[in-house]
Image: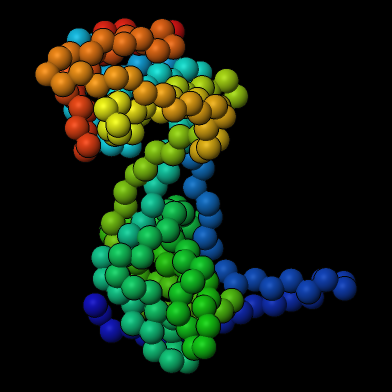
Length: 240
């Protein structure tokens, strides 16, 4: 990392009537990037029919999803080296620190971190790459203070999925063996709720050395082998 130099840029202020206006035109300003969101049809059944699969205890044998979700693409920044904190000089950030990618008013890349180490607390530390060459050359903090940098970074994309009204999911999971029975859990989830709106445990008789065919909620499944740790099976028909 190149030598870091702290800079104090001039602040030009003027008074108009009773309003004091401060213009710090020499410092770049962070702006949020707009992100595109699309509605995606979530209708899906898994796994494939008539194929053999093995899942561990607690995992899903069968899933049905209906409705739609909102898919949003975001871009983030990850620092490829650390910025060393120097007391009473400039904030510090650790290598690998990530945040959302933004932009400056001139169209350069920008990133703001709200938890940069500085003196006895944390401050907002914004980094700017006006040349968009993969290096943040300037950092701003504490309102009107800045520091010259040469910090490499990486940009990566991610997609978030938010279930919309009408989104519905059914799952059948494996719960292991007990007392000669194969145990399952059926659950239903609505919208973006992490907790099931309906859940039902049930069991079927285990027949060692034989394939077991059973139906539940319209689904037809053939159990080929069940152990304390996993189950091998084939889906003949999906949930209705």
